[in-house]
Length: 79
Image 1: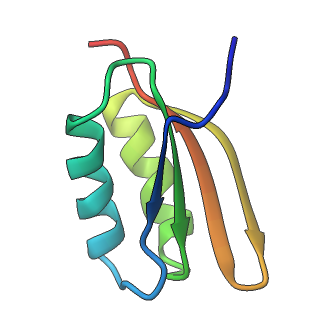
Image 2: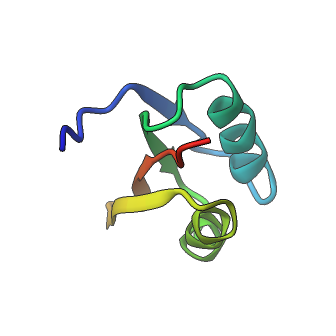
C-alpha cells in the first residue's frame, strides 16, 4: 500500500471543533482511499480525530506529537 499523502490540512492555531469540521470538509473533496495529513495544535484533537476516523470508517495510519504540533495521517474509507 502506498501511504503517500495526497493532501495536507493545516489547522494549527484553531480550537475545537474547527479542526474536525475542516477535516470533514476536506474529506468530502477527496477520493476514497486518499491519504490526508492533519496538522493541529489543539490537544483535544488527540481525542477527536481518532474518534472521527472510527465513526466514519477512516483508517488512522499514524499520529504523533512534536513540539506541540499533532500530526495525523488518515486513509479515507472506501465509499
